[in-house]
Length: 582
Image (tube, rainbow, N blue to C red):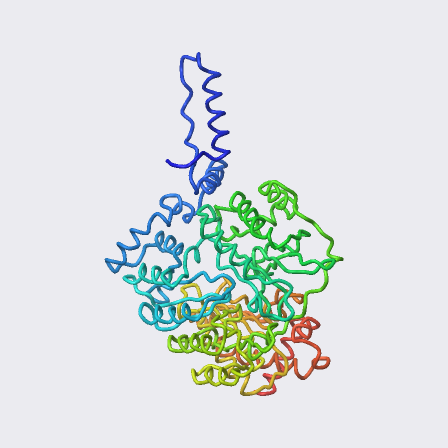
């Protein structure tokens, strides 16, 4: 086996030799010691060994990683493709390391997910992905809530081809699924935002390539999310991530506040740690945090395997001490009193025309119906970015995209070109914040068709109400909360509704209200449980009507309105209106 021994391995061998010398005259040799795990996967194997030595039982996914590392199994993926075969559960897990998700029974095909640091790619890459979607997938793509792209309906014979075609474009899908560090997000308007404190693009890029080139950062106890917020006008939602770096101004200098433990599907947002760092320190600190998670994360229970539960078990200070041990130095702790407030969000800045920090240039936010666009639309958007903008296409966590660098004199032409594609650069206050996961159309976990229902809710409400403020509505299909329903003003999570004593069921949702992000970060409260999907649009309309009629002036947000009412009172406002209408 090539390469030098690590310091841990050298200490182990030195101790082993010393022990052998100490018993050199003994007549019977001691039992042979178990081999020391070596190579890039050693830290994970040692963590697994510690679990079993303590009497724990590894979950199947940990056993599958140990039996055959996914990155060593690519020849078998190609062999399965040649035979047109779909994977068994253990290989379905392994192939996610290449970004391939077998999504049966929702769809008898693969979904492929990319890695796009900070959500930015250039026009020819975007047009190339349109070709990939058309030649090897269903002819369309989705923008995700991690400012990423997904291609669906990839058949098994195309599985390795699609991975390689993505790499041909200078993109990749490596590690975008399973127990890995997912796509790194950053400010959508990084480098062009008049109010930003820091450009997150180099930070996201550094972390992206750090992950790609270190195999020891794959195969964590569970998935892991990292985000950088530069203080721009569009929210990055970094508080929903395991690690968030937030640009702040302290004493005239720009620092990054470290927040940890966000996982909204488990009703938790990342919390400040008291730690601040400079931009050049972010990557090393993130690396150390991940390595502590590798050592301490739960490998026996998938539902408790996220970093939040390590923090809950040992506390933030003990975790940070372990991070300092990995770094070999102390972290910088500063008082929050010296930090200036973050510049304000504009909840509509990801839609429409907005002036950049560069004089005479603009970004245009394009509305995508719950993140979906077909291949011709993708090619058209790529051409708009090339012909009217600076060539970049910027994906956002709001499931839409921005065309940046559009000169003042070309804005009207760009808007007309967007409309000619059957898309729009404007949206109602509801549609601007409408977010939905893939849903039952393409995900086996979802209990409802979220994208379809989201559009039905928007159609219903827009035909009956004229909202004058942004209200975010998030629909997610299951407890994984990919659409982050708990931070929506109104959040819906898919549920099966029992209709009668015979046990017949229909699609439906439980509804929460009052969630938020940024300086209004909050987990929503449950208002209704298991409402039929066909009744949800009426519930959303009722809530919004009650808000418009009873708010304390236009300055009161929907979140503030719901926060000053108990759930029973809010239900009563809607139920009374429904009874009156009936």
